[in-house]
Image 1: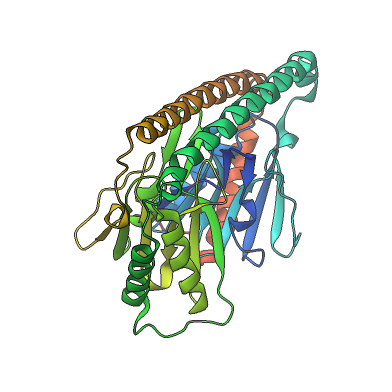
Image 2: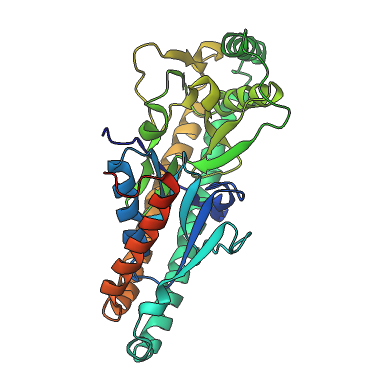
Length: 371
């Protein structure tokens, strides 16, 4: 049996506005089944989900890994789209409570498998470490806020100097909308938008899994160009055109400023619109269409303005480096908390519970004995 396709996304992100969540878009509330895992750090939630995800991949089911932006080696959720089934981490900072308990949602309490007395013995240490983690995240978010201010400065120069041709931009947008949608019948009167991150600011820097999101699609429109030349506006215009024509879309937001949409996928048309820019450059594949936004821009000729702009970009990068350092320190501190829990968990019992959940999912496929 061929292996399923794996898509990697981030349902939440460390942004200039703090932790920003799209957890409501991991799966629809009327899904076939949603398993919500509760428990503290180090209790095995990510391993629990990853093992089930890998098993379903090996059985040929397309799978989504929803990764944690504060520890990109860990999972916040796993989704099996064809089955309409998800397993979601329901602990802070992404507290998820069942919307349809019993009918759709099922809570899995991994806290049932810890040694409470062993954890109480380290209460003071755990409380102190949690306070330090909160402090480190505050510092990280301060630098991300500053980084966004400097990046907005970088973006502002083309518009402020009149270098951006609005007429040229509008003509390209109209041409793209015509190319994408001409001859495509209207789909529905109630199109849906699924909001996620394809890129996140993590303890290892800014990480993107854009390739797992768009590589398998039939067609990609790659938007190249400098910051401030209208790339995200172009993406949003195409998204609005898709919605007007009744197409469901997946909107992938900027890791720094979640108000900005960087990439778009229109599943029904099997196409993506990709904003190829730092920190998520994308190399075009055969058959892709490349749109260069610099085509409707007059290069900055004023040396003073160019120097100011370069300084703003340097400050943006410096702030991002500092934010990454604080996120890294927060993760290392979180690892210390996990160590206390790992020593006080019954992982044998958790593995048995995992096998039980896997059987429940396989039962939904009607192929419980097939591999």
